[in-house]
Length: 290
Image (cartoon, one colour):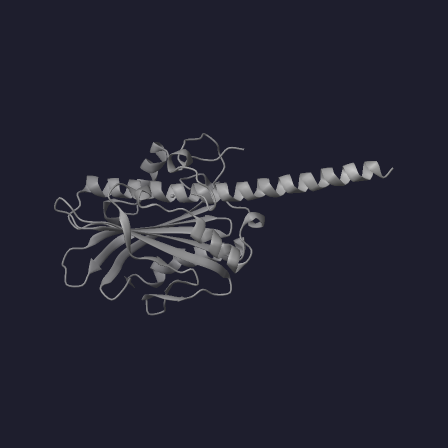
């Protein structure tokens, strides 16, 4: 059974339709190697014509906190996944025993993961400003939930956050506003590449500055695992530059989701091989006992 491409040129064009131009919601929307493998990013991105989403079977997902922490730490996320010129930001990693929560006061803060989450790890990157534009900030978070049901609930909660908080305080100096959100389950055959894809986009404002900057947020569910990415665009970007940044970031998220999918298929294959080997051994032993 084949898998969909990480992001074909046509898919990127569809995804960008709903994620640029100042957050206009025109119905275009959604917008990334594997733990324990050394496959290259280029191999992950090879195109396919298949019609299945990237996913992770619940039976193949990490089942304990120790397994989940090993999984999120082992999942390769390289700076150049998101384009040229990116490097690790300080702090580079946050988690895996805490995650970001949007409080009732609409302020994002880190809290201990709940009992429904096994691990969550955020990695942050920056592309320093050059040529008259400011820095671009990208973060990517992989979260392992205890079940598909809990991951679906998390996706639903994320989808309603812009309605609950039209303005979200990212930190002490940055505010996100004018947010719009959209969800695309894969079976609706729109632009989703995983079991469920969410997109949010709007403007973020830095205290003391008069001009806002574009903000993109993507979240993808693969079985009980979610992969979320944020992009804070640079001041001074042209529309062409903004589109290029978004396209590169989406490609990076595609590398990660493709490898989560591969992780699950590898584990399923290994389990099947072990079961077949055990069955064969039993059959041989039984034949000798006749």
